[in-house]
Length: 287
Image 1 (cartoon, rainbow, N blue to C red):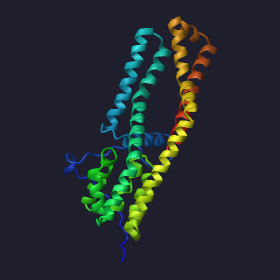
Image 2 (image 1 turned 90 degrees about the vertical axis):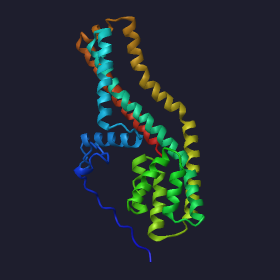
Image 3 (image 1 turned 135 degrees about the vertical axis):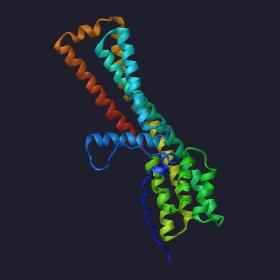
Image 4 (image 1 turned 60 degrees about the horizontal axis):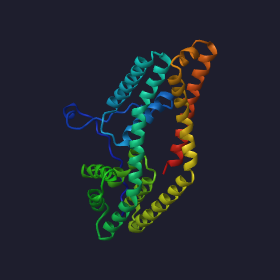
């Protein structure tokens, strides 16, 4: 008789254990779809999926410090408020862009580790181990970053959580959608049984095929992606070139209504274009 997996009960935080377990900081309430909650949710996912051990509050302070430092430095050099404001905005974005780059590299490593981990899990299950013992073995034998996530799931199992619940949030913690197939296969095997070895072997083959397809797609669209990046980089470089050639360029531009309107319209459109381009690149790179 197959028993259904019971959902894990939430553990209320106790003041006496405040110094033992690190509290998970989240800025998103998760109860509505307002713009502020959406932004907070995106930042929470960025910090969680990048694997950065720094507190999110410290990372936000780093964004503010970088923006103030870069904006102040440009203002001291040029004494131009618009250019200093633009530099401050760029400074605010730099730590977030760095975290996004770390997340992208980490997700790529997890994608390439997943087929080998699935095959090793299948070999462990074929040798007669149950799913819990096989997951313990694979977690201890897999390198970071996928190994770190599997070891977190194993620690949850050691605390009494069933294997399906322990691995259920792997896709959310990593941002790698291919892990959904692994967690679904483990949960399905726990609930209904079946040939887990065959499922894991087919999963490894499927992930390798998808990796091959993504690599071919990225090679075919590299010109479009580089063109999009050039469209984002060239306008600030052109402004910087004019400012170097004529230090009073922005001052003269801001002295008229049409100059101010043109400048700030260009800045807003540049930001909107950057957001749209990065969202498109993120969607096409999602795997």
